[in-house]
Length: 137
Image (cartoon, rainbow, N blue to C red; front, side, top):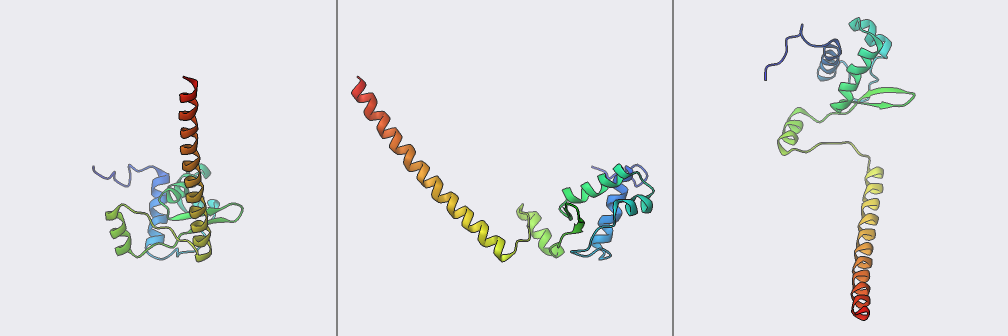
């Protein structure tokens, strides 16, 4: 598939490309706040909805994340080699604090316990149904 020339790309794609390049080249670093939509509009001479679309593309690519009422921030990205290795493996990297990881682990453990209990209940219901069917004959 051939990449469309810069002239053929939609304005939101051009803006997203430039912002992506700012991130890749370190002009926007992990944790930095993305320029306000009004600044993106002025920089690329685009409408508000077009600027929103450009930022949406970056969010979909997991390069930035939004905090409601605060702004959109650049995500910490893995080193290029790690990203390439991960892409080959088909995985995705996310950043999680140790406290959040502990909470997630506790939730997963709790869910596993609940699944086991439900499986035991299901087996018990099956036995009861089998007994009921035998006595109903």
